[in-house]
Length: 52
Image (tube, rainbow, N blue to C red; front, side, top):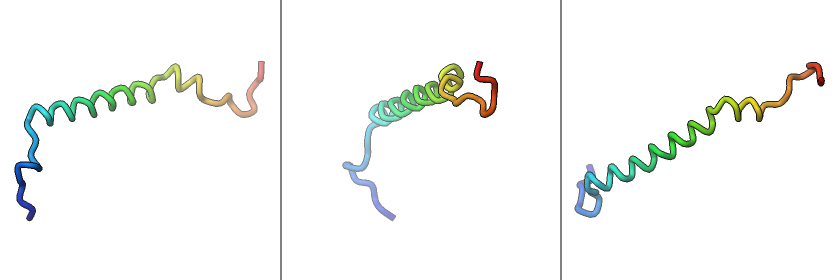
């Protein structure tokens, strides 16, 4: 088992800052991907449907 040294450890404040960056990016990415209006606009028209 690897022993932790002082170089391997980070402070609680640093850990919270790193996690908050990932959380913000995840929330933003989820909002963009799951946005219903953009998803509908990006989908192709129905195959064989009425073009008018």
